[in-house]
Image 1 (tube, rainbow, N blue to C red):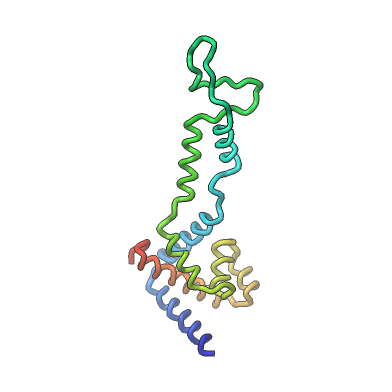
Image 2 (tube, rainbow, N blue to C red; image 1 turned 180 degrees about the horizontal axis):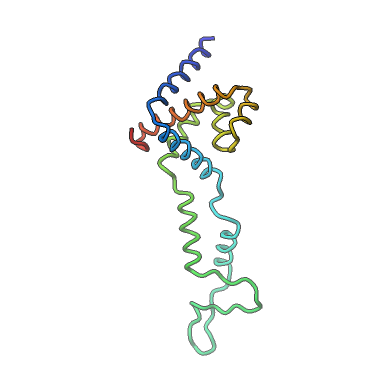
Length: 174
């Protein structure tokens, strides 16, 4: 029973911490949390980008033309099939993939937030359903068997906790 009381007190403490932040700040934290889950679930390369890289690496090198000129910049493609991606296209694909996989300063904040809540806890389920899966509050309330007041109190407490961690880690200015 004392473990439950501690959990309730922790929830109240984070709810009080959330009151120290403006709605705009908590909205920014919520948007960063959605971005965190997008980065975690998004593929590093699209199917088309991966195919272009494979085509570039797997296609034969351009050959010397019969006139003795080098056809390195303009390889001849015959048969109307797919063309070999240009070096500029490949460089763009690599840069976009690197940008997608670059960690955000917020990733460390949300990694810590997720480890603070045990798997299967109300808070963890609320975080995943709301920010990862994008469910609305009515669907979450129904699934978790809680009322809207409880939902919004826990959501605000979670965002307050994330904001406190962000301030501690320097990702958010107090």
